[in-house]
Image (cartoon, rainbow, N blue to C red; front, side):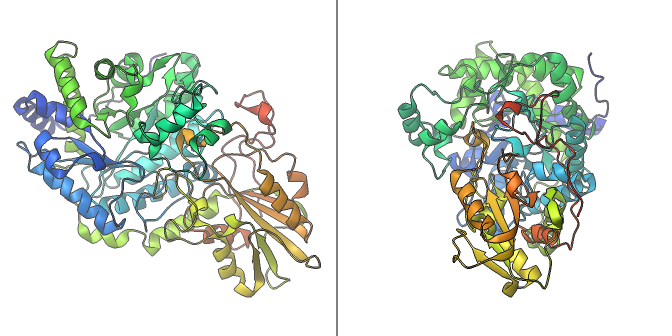
Length: 622
């Protein structure tokens, strides 16, 4: 059944007149320039002036050197000044992936990833996180974030599962709206409002395992070479393991794949959060790499134009994903450009070669393959968002906001979020909370003292990384601060003297950081090294507490009987003290699963009638 359109117009009549007057003054090249979004490493401020570019983005790891808030502000401001120096002086809309805080900036506050916020089930908390994130983003001159993801993950083998709040569409809608409200603040025309990009439209999380065609899996050696030489995107993904090894583990099996679901399911489950976001005033939607029933979303006129723009009445603009149009007809770029623009893409993310896209689209218009009216429609939508943000009146942001990046108030909020995101799933013999003033606590595992793994992917770099990638507090540091350093003994490898025994041992386990298809995994069991660590510590303690840092539920059915307590801590961000607060009883456990926790690999993908180790909504109080 068709949905009723969103009825609140983003602009008043005077603003609409301004957009039409500006549009009438623009040349074809200036219009195409507004539709073009390169990555900052491939253009200069002078290029922005010359080409009249509408946007520049920083991809994951697209940072200035040195990576400081002040350097970020200087970099973004230089691009904005380039835009203002163009013939018409149309301000730039700079975009970043601020998906759990301003996460590309060293020193910014890093909040829990969405899967943890889904477990917290606190819309007001998410709204406050959106507001804090907006302030840190605006401090660096940026006014656009590629968030929130409103995915409804169906198969947690997907490497983007942690970007989804929940497998419950209603909860996703509620939390997405809360984040949008926080990013908007007092209104889109406020100088601290940040434009959200609701993504990835639509049903990206319903793709079928094995349907991804991002990588040629029949030529692993060739793919490895491509990742390191010709494929500029995959070359950015620095991982500890080689590309071929990751492919063998399941990388790029589901991400960017094909959703084979019927339209009724697409509308009922996956489209609903977009409707909610539009009602909340969202003015940008990002198209998904994925396909629906075999047709790439970037070429899907029915879903992009007929449903989103016409049926739902969306008056904002649709942006492509990174090189997303290139996948429509691989090897035929001009055909990709024509298909994507005619389908309804308004701004195209062309990270490496803006002028190639500009030339291609110009030829398409001049050759009659793309009508001028479609170009005007796209540019009108982009200008509408810029006017709504009041960029023409206030293209520059307040430098005094820099003092808010990573400030104590925001870190206190992140600590609260980390605490609320924890889910207690087992607690035999009241192993938790940890008791004070008793025998020393043994903490084991390298992940207990690693801020990088707490934050996961999309942290400073695209894939994230281990170690002190950005300032923060590890779980071990939090426990020592709360219980006292003398009460916490630490062994990274769990190798202890034979005669050593503890009343309580606490092991922290973590997934290696990853993002997108690099994190697709066929096997979600704990590693052999992790199991060995658990057994070494189990042999030296009376009670064993396990804290799991992960971007999704892992398969723990065989190991769980050996644990007295089990805590799903997700990816809590920089404030490990929030985890310690709950483990030590200063804050109660209140989190509830927002995903089903599979009992075995046979439970994937999720089925309503399938089995589960723990069901959505599970969680104990302490």
